[in-house]
Image 1 (tube, helix red, strand yellow):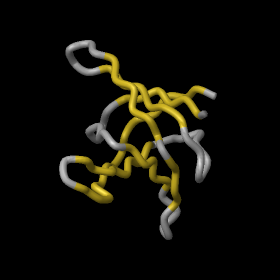
Image 2 (image 1 turned 60 degrees about the vertical axis):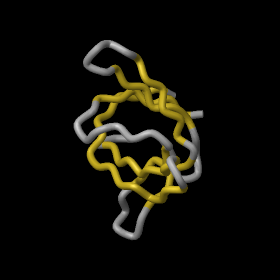
Image 3 (image 1 turned 90 degrees about the vertical axis):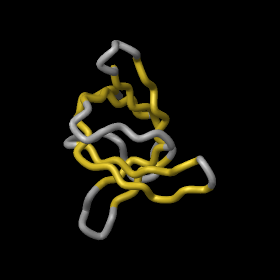
Length: 83
């Protein structure tokens, strides 16, 4: 399934050396908790980015977080593909 969304928040979950794990929330998602997939974004220079979503979690406040290794800035338009 493919859907369009916007990044609403980003948080650093953990860091080991130079590798970080980030949590990103979207204004709309088709990912279910525990699922995986891809978030695609296009940079201002036109470069297409594919960010793997390694997991999806929901916090105690009901916010759905997409676990990724590369962050995108809040306000970034993305296309999600569930795996």
